[in-house]
Image 1: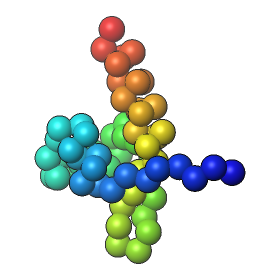
Image 2 (image 1 turned 90 degrees about the vertical axis):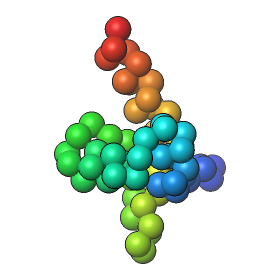
Image 3 (image 1 turned 120 degrees about the horizontal axis):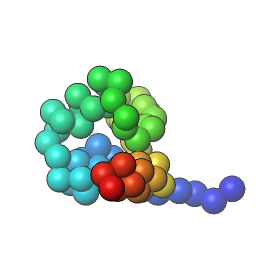
Length: 62
């Protein structure tokens, strides 16, 4: 198994250009959102999950 890059909430927020409150609302509100994992009190995202989610959003908009 290869190690995969995990992104912090701050990194995802910065990459997507969204606010902290938008990330929380999307993650907790049952919206279509990249899978995440909680490690202690931290929320982390797999880089591939974020990339897949972004790609899926591109195809929806067409």
